[in-house]
Amino acid sequence: MSHARTRTLTSSAILILGIFFIATNLRAPVTGIAPVLEDIIASFSLSPSQAGMLTTLPLLAFALASPLANWLAKKLGLEISLFIALLLIGAGLASRLITNLPLLYLGTAIIGVGIAIGNVLLPSLIKRDFPHKVAVMTSAYVLAMAIFGGSYAAIVFPLSQYQDIGWQLALASYGLLTLLGIILWFPQLKYHTKPVKELVNTQANSNVWRQSLAWQITLLLGLNSFFTYIMVAWLPSILIENGISPLQAGAMQGAFQAASAVPGIILIPLLARLKDQRILTSTLALLGALCSFGLLFMPELALFWSITLGFCSGACFILGLSFVSLRTHNSRQAASLSAMAQCIGYLIAATGPMLAGALHDHFNSWAPTLWLCAIASFGCAVFGYLGGRNITLKKDL
Image 1: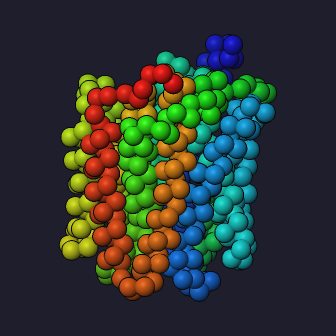
Image 2: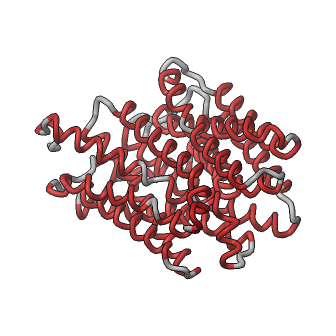
C-alpha cells in the first residue's frame, strides 16, 4: 500500500511542487551549455570534438546510469533516490565555478547521472502517487522541463555578458533552482517507499529485444534524440556561422527547446483518438528533415526553422514514448520496452554531438552536420511509419 491515499491537500500540494522543481532540473543543466559553448571553447582551446563531449557525457550517463536508478530505488526508496539525484545535479553545477577542464567534464557527467536517476524514477513516482492523473502530471513535468530548458538557453548568454560575470557563473547560477528543489523535497524524506514492481522488474522481459516492432520504436526514439542533441549542442554555433549574433543564436536555441514542449499539449489529447499513427509520425519527421535543409539553404529564416524543428523533435519524442504504452499489453512489458529504448536510444544519441563536432573539424563547415540531421530525420520517418502501425508486441511475454 502506498502512502498516496493518506496525504492531506497541503502535503499533496508540496509533493506536486517538489515534482515540478525536480522536473526543472532534468534538462536545463545540460542544454544551457550550448549558447556559451563558443566561450568555453575559447577558455580551454577545445576542438569541436572535445566540445561535443560536454553534451555526449550526460547522454552516456543517461544510458548507463538508468539501471543504477532502479537499484537505488529498491534499496533506499523513491524519495531518497530522487533527493540524491538533486544533490548530484547541484554538485555538478557547483563544480562549474572552478576553472578546470577535467572537473568540467566530471561535473557534467555527474549532472548526467543525476538527471538519469530523475528521468527513470519520476514517472514511477507519478504512476504510484497519481494513478488517475498520469497523463496530466506527465505532460506538466515534460512542459516544465522544456520551458525551463528553453528559457535558460535564451538567457544564459546575456547573463554571462552582464557585468562580465562569465560563462562559469552563468552556468553555475542554475544551481539556485536545484537548491530550491532540494529544500522543497525535504518533506518527502520521511517516506521510504519503493517503486511499483512493474517499473523495477525490467529484466524479466528480455524477449522484447528479439522483436522487430520493439527495435522500430527504439530506433525512432534513438534517431530523434540523435539529431535533437546535435541541435542542443551545436545550434547556436551553426547559427553564428551563418552570421547570426550570439545573443540571437541563444534566443533561437531557447525557442527551439520551448517549441519542443508544445506537442505535449496538442498531441496527448489527439493520440487517444488515433488508432494508427503512421502518417502523423512520418510527416512530422519529414518536416524535421526539411527544417535541417532550411537551416542550410535558407538561413535567413533561421527562427522559423528552429521553432518548427523544435516542434517536430518534441512531437516525434512524444509519439515514440506513447508507442511504448500503445504497442504493449501490460505495464511490465511497457517497462521492458522503455528500458530497451532508453538504453539503446541514448547510446545512439550520445554519438551525435561528438560526430557533429568531428565533421565540423574536418570540413570546417556545419553543412555536413545539417545533412546528417536530415538523414536522421528520414530514418525517424521510416521507423515512425513502421512503429506507428496499429499492432502490438507478441503477447506471450
